[in-house]
Amino acid sequence: MGHYKAMLESFRCNQHTYIPEIVLLISHMSLLTSSPFHRWERASQVMIEKGKGQHIENLHIIQLCEADLNFILHIIWGKRLMRSALHHLDKAQFAIPGQTCHNAVLNKLLYLDLSRQTLTPGLMLDYDAKTAFDRVISSIANMACQRLGLPCIAGMFMHNLLHDMSFHVITAFGRSALTFSNCDDPTSVGHGILQGSSSACPIFIFSSDVCLSTYKNHSIGAKFIHPISGNIMSDSAVQFVDDTSQFTNSLGCGITDYVHDIRSNTDTLFSNAQSNITTWNDLIWISGGKLNPGKCYFYSFHPSYDHKRHRLSYRQLEPSTPLHLLDKDNQTQIRLEHCSPCNA
Image (cartoon, rainbow, N blue to C red; front, side):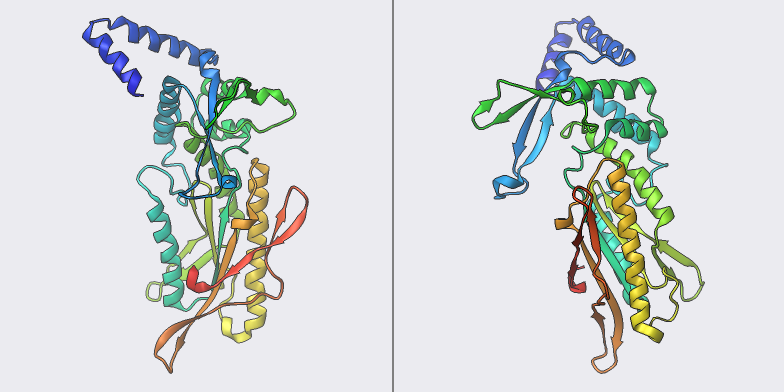
């Protein structure tokens, strides 16, 4: 935005105030007609390192668009729509104004701490979505945004922009001579959401919020009972952009006396966890996404008090049948890694 600010500053100094007004008027007409400028339909793809010293196969792809287009996307989706939708989003969303990734981590720590204090066996699942922004189906994301108040013309503007946009690829060797476009393959339903733009993260949050709300209504979460008041507190998930953690415990599964039949109760706990995995995997797939099995884990723990050592200890629970994730591309079951409760 630096060169745009410099241009507007020079206009102001020269008292040519009508030029910025004309630019804004034309941009407004483009939005009202859902017809992006031709220069807005050209972008560049850049591959950057995902963390310092990562190998070339872990490069992160982002799209760079025109600065004034990025500003408009920020105003519509990042500011106005986010402000109106903030009170309607699920409480498990933490990539929103007023929240940070630290709040999401603290929420996970609260679940573990309550499990420790109440000696409640539980299980936590960590998911990571594969190429999350690139797999979003723009039409579904558009409906999710309209559900929260996005005008139809703005949704159509974004759809036309993504459909007609052409991309150059920029590498260390320079800019590619040829381009590719989303409309090159009409059979492909996914347009992505222009990762790297100001609207990408808000659109992903609005789209995934539908999946998150549906999951919480159909899953088996974690429950805790206050020892004095008897009030029940429940929680089922924490999400920060495309990283999701989900909780369940014995009380949430309806088990009031876990130690009475440990083997049977453990199988019940893991059976409900497997049902939650299937539900979340299906919801992500329906919305155009896909889970990355290599970055999905689960932690199980049975906290108990060691009377000899006078301290709490954690025992890892072992399921009769390993938890698995169905790879939707080739319909194969992939076993999830069972991590130690000390790493949870």
